[in-house]
Length: 191
Ligand code: ITT
Image (tube, rainbow, N blue to C red; front, side):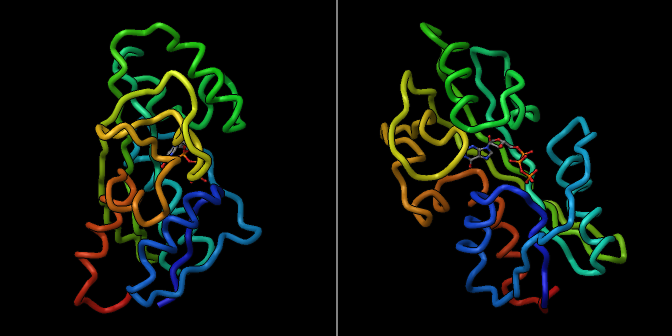
């Protein structure tokens, strides 16, 4: 029941580990494998590309997530390009850029989307999706999480960066996608 976690994002690794702990799978890190280029045009395609590439290379099932932030006032940007929004590759720089782009913006509705794919060496794929609706803050709040978490507020006003791992799991896009994966595997055999 070994499963490779096909992500280079340490924040995602922590969330996978916490969410899937009670499945009893042996989650293995990417190690020195390199992630493929994300050439798809949807979250699902990119998650599939990542999971399938790592499953092929290792001969083990592999779990990948492709996710993004969609801001209503930006016409859904940055979406699948969230990791390289404005050409910035560092979380802090990207957050500053997002604040610049959304300064005085009136429609601050936003959502996070996650598509999780579990790929098997025989080519079989499973796909799970989750979303969370919220609003974009005008400045960072909280120090937890990763990526855009300090700028994304839930309807109760707390940002995702103010939540513990388990609190974030209960409400987040990735938490919901992983809950669907867990439900599908609860009584089934390990991968
Ligand atoms: P891998 O492809 O190696 O998994 P990545 O960080 O490049 O890592 P994505 O291509 O899916 O992953 O990019 C998604 C980006 O969207 C990510 O870098 C964050 O900036 C943002 N993001 C996704 N989920 C998030 C979350 O739960 N909280 C905050 N930001 C998130």
